[in-house]
Length: 335
Image (cartoon, rainbow, N blue to C red):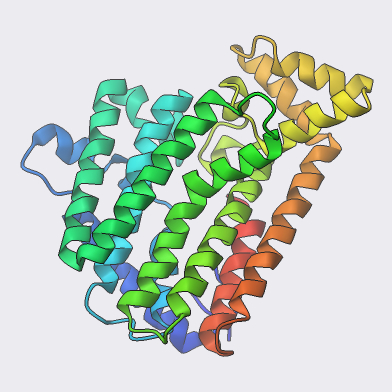
């Protein structure tokens, strides 16, 4: 019968039950991990956590750990660590992007201002660092390297490609650092801490790198196709801030190589004033009707297939099947 594991359809029922049970425990530990005697931080630190979320990264830790002993020491700490790091990055990203909403609620900076939002993100990073220290020195090293990549990914997105640099290669490198690095950490830590067979952690690390890029390409599609009520984010917010996405890069390339009226209109609007809701809505509508959206969806699917091909290096069985379902769902999700 179909499983009840969020986001992963039709996997082994016993495995699903084990993962769901541990996700519940991790949810409690997440809340405990941000507890503070400070009145302000008690509210701001839990703001995005209480808004919900898919818990993709903790789920990947647990799935990877299921290749060994999922109840081994440090596994649940690792699951909390990666989610805290992700949440911290969201506080910072929303400031960088001037995003008014996140997960269907007001973003932290919209409620309390940029300074409070940034300091809350720093607080969560500090709590995540404490967990990595508890796990061990190798976890500290891997977490610090991932944190560095998160920062560099945001920096490179902000400054854009260098003169002469391929904008598509630059964009994929940004996705790798900003999104895939943390999924690679989740997969690698889960496998390592569970005592999975030698070589498994490296497979899961490479898988995380690939599925993270697919996940973000799918998010580029979702950002244009969904609405705030279903996705929890304002559609096209990256467009307003001038942040490149795969659909806009594809349109710009087409306009440069084979200009047509539709592409040129999109470019004109991308480079124009998008401060009003009507101007943003009109641009989103144009991009929804553009072939670049379907091209991005297909690219996300091909990248997901490459991630699944990496999983073929794992032993056949319920966990590999679950990871394949997990991959497919990340790319085909509607929110």
